[in-house]
Amino acid sequence: MAESKKTKKSSSSQSSKGSIWSLNKISFWTIVAVTVLYAVSLILSAVGVDLKIVGALQGVATAIMIIIVSILAWRFVRSKPFVWKILYVICLLIVLAGIVVPLVI
Image (cartoon, rainbow, N blue to C red; front, side, top):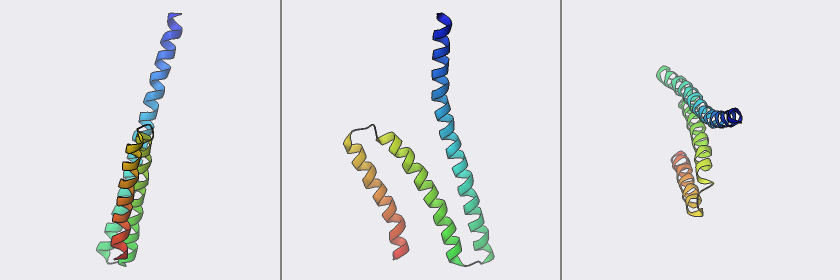
């Protein structure tokens, strides 16, 4: 009886640690991918390649980070009261406007 309680307890703690590790892995590999994109962008800029390609690579890197962060933020906010969800949407719209408006102007 005591053994079954121990195995249940250890398996539940392992599953919660597993989700944290996967979140850490996602964060790490996102940083690695974005670093590669920014490094390529930096090299192309230093060589004198067309500015549109450099800007596009930086835009892709920024988009990847915003997507990952917004998904993780939604996972935090979805169980919160409605005010938190409104704040999330407002912040996301302002971030998107901060990206789009400078490109248009």
